Amino acid sequence: MTYILGTKQTFRDADDAVAMEFLETVCDITALPEYQQLKQFRHHYGTTRYQHCLNVAWYTFLWCRNRGLNYRSAARGAMLHDFYLYDHHKEQPFPGSHAEVHPRAALSNALKFFDPDAIMIDCIVNHMWPGSPHRPATPEGLIVTIADKYCASLEFGTFAARKGLRAVSVH
Ligand SMILES: [Fe+2]
Ligand SMILES: [Fe+2]
Image (cartoon, rainbow, N blue to C red; front, side):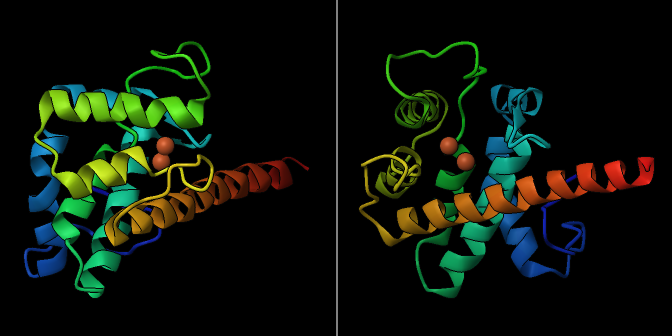
């Protein structure tokens, strides 16, 4: 079942054409067993890397669609932007900072399992900007950087609120 943080959409209503198109755009990615492994990695404290990628892809899809951009490639790039299968607190496949290394690891996996176009590649390798010096070259890539930060805020805020409420209920 698909769930996106911050939306009321169920992604089960066949009359919701936008949600159905989103699912159709990303379904081959979510179906990949290696991609499913992202569910095993915690991300932004309270969510999984799988859920984070879905959140980023949905907002990227909407915002690019509303602006007449290539929303399908953008959403697919967003789905793959954090497609790295290791715990960065414990290991890294290349030397360098996490901000520099994990987009390259995600691109390596994207190239292994999919056939990313130039927009998707831009969305993946440059998504850490301005946290890394690699600025996106496309408007779709720029929107992924914004959606990534927006979703990280939502995810962390949800986690913090949950923790806060639990703390309040203890006293
Ligand atoms: Fe990332
Ligand atoms: Fe991310």
